Amino acid sequence: MTTSESIEVLRKQWGKKLFILGHYYQQDEVLRHADVTGDSLELSRRAAAAREAERIVFCGVHFMAESADILRSPHQAIYMPDIHAGCPMADMAPLREVQQVWKDIQAVATGLPARSATSVAGGSSPERSAQAGWIPVVYVNSSAAVKAFCGEHGGSTCTSSNAAKVFQWVLGQGKRILFIPDEHLGANTAHELGLPDEAVSVYDPGKKWGEVGVDGIARARVLVWKGYCHVHTFAVDDITSARRRYPGAKIIVHPETPAAATRLADAHGSTSQIIKYVESAPVGSTVVIGTEFHLVDRLARQHRGRLTIVPLRQSVCRNMILTTEAKLLALLEQWPEEQIVRVPEPLRVNARKALARMLEVK
Picture (cartoon, rainbow, N blue to C red):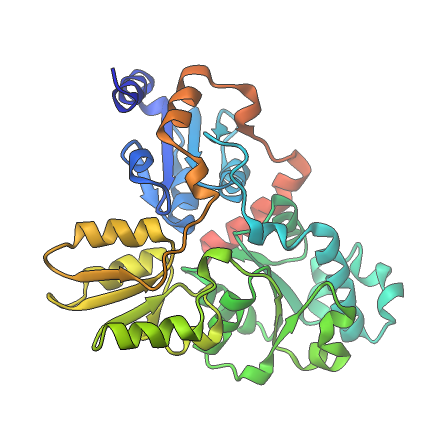
């Protein structure tokens, strides 16, 4: 019996008590066994809705499985085929640095010396934070600890699909945004909403006052964390090269792409939005896509004969491909305790607040 056949036998035995989630960036050999395939937002929603399942297997990276654990019911357990599949961008925003940046911006807002502002920021309530005029928004590509911080301080998570809606939710309250951890999604979303570039400041947590200074913090309507996704570091040269190679082609990139390149593309969108863009492209056209290569390659095969689809650059998420069909089978056969993803209960409570706010935004 092949690996694939063995997995399907086990899936049939478990029935509705087993639910397998697969992110779009996974390899085809894994996705063929997923009950649901989607981007982060879709998978977060489906994980929360899978009430009949006792064991949820997340074929993705660690922060996604953490989100599923935060939203799960008491009778459920979240597993990963490879517990070491992480996210470098999430690692760029450790909790201790987020806490310090929050102290700094609260100090600027309240006029207190930054390093003596612990009473304002270190244990501040959502009410005190709101008085200072800031609400934290954290990309789901982040640790559970940072999500919990965000939830505790009245903020929300977001994905690349709904970042604009979450930004509008904050700005509509007359508040300002601390966006963690992706600089480019934050800057691109602000631009999409019509905010001028001078209203966005990039805060480098490794530098004094983020290298923007007190004035940069004070004038920002959106303060974006200096973090990025290795997969989506497409550059202006990638866009101009594609224009030369494929005259007349449409170029769409993921919003984690740096702003200069994003603005030269024809469109930008989340993974699910890229898929919809391709599906609606005119027959015979060429679409150049700037996102993870496995998705681009899959779309090229699915639309062969109708469209020409090419990658802007072959960029692979090394953490996503840690999950393999063989590891999925081993998990379903053995269910090792060490492959359960568990978020400590105090963190779950506050992180759930941030995720729930995101899921409520329409």
